[in-house]
Image (cartoon, rainbow, N blue to C red; front, side, top):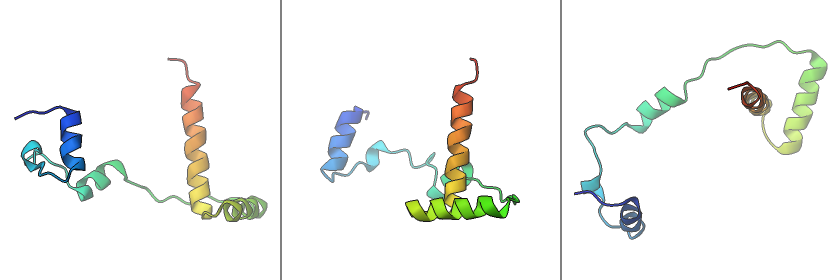
Length: 87
């Protein structure tokens, strides 16, 4: 039986059993999803000491790790660069 997304959401929000509307045979487990969409590759990058000090200072200022700030800044730059490409 098919229902609308709104009906599904309402049943879910009301803690009703929604299992009859789910496809368990073709479901992706959280582990499989994580492997598929969150794969990482470890790399090493050498930075000048002054750059590392500035990264650490900024990371501490906003309350995150050096690795996190590098990841965020690189992701932001790549996104900005891809938005500037001609389509």
